[in-house]
Amino acid sequence: MTGVLPVALEDATKVVHALLDSGKEYVCVMKLHKELPENKIRETLGLFQGKIFQRPPVRASVKRQVRVRKIYYLDVLEVDGRNVLFKVGCEAGTYIRKLCHDVGEILGCGAHMYELRRTRSGPFTETSGIVTLHDIAYIHSKWQETEDSAILKKFIQPMERALELFPKIYVRDSAVDALCHGAHLTAPGVVMLETGIEAGSKVCILTLKGEAVAMATATATTQEILRKNHGIVARNDRVLMPRGTYPKLWRSKRQSS
Image 1: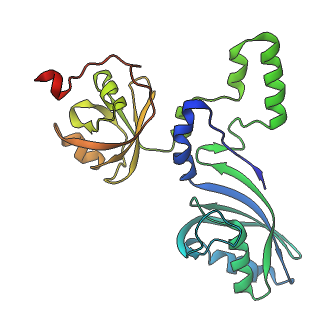
Image 2: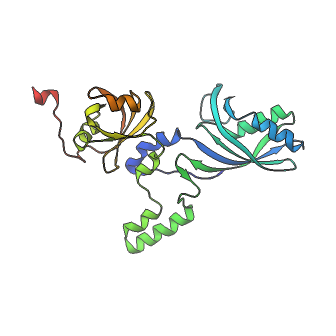
Image 3: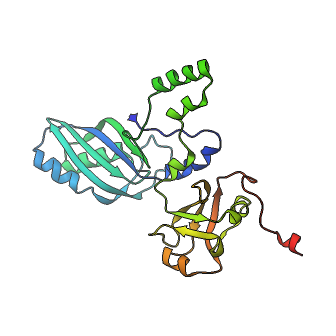
């Protein structure tokens, strides 16, 4: 397998779980065990769009139990004899080699994954400034020669880049340090937010400068949050910003007493 592989450094490892849960896109070469009419191949692959049941293969890092995964799109790009080239966008945790096996079962001829390339992982795509290992080695050697940290920005991106696809809530500076200490976000701390937030959905909490503060679970929809003037609107799941980055402008119960 080749393709896009996001790598997190230092404190940015806190967002790895968010990337693991993000959607993926692959380009795959599936090899059929028998030549079949192209129209039958395309028709069968079309059946796998939407929600599918899938049991992870024997060589998998998770428990082998049937689970539901969603295929957002599956486009056949080319059929050449027993080789089928297709592009698939899918939910995280979808096994493409198992998908190929299941397609072969439906076709009645058998099939296996011959080659796989990941073209998207969350917000990162092949056309969004990814670099090869050779590029990294070259850039790193230039940095050692010049000690100019700006050179490293050619392949090291801000942590916020990994969170681009999450709905966002922007908060007041006075609320930031409390959130960094694990407090849940309340309505008075919200300055603005994106549309489409649903209760129970994962959201990213940002400062007004666009700095990531925490990952949280919304307790209300966008419209409900806009109408609230008190109460919790998002429960803190993972703090991303170090404590003390913003001044402490809140009081604990012990201090207030």
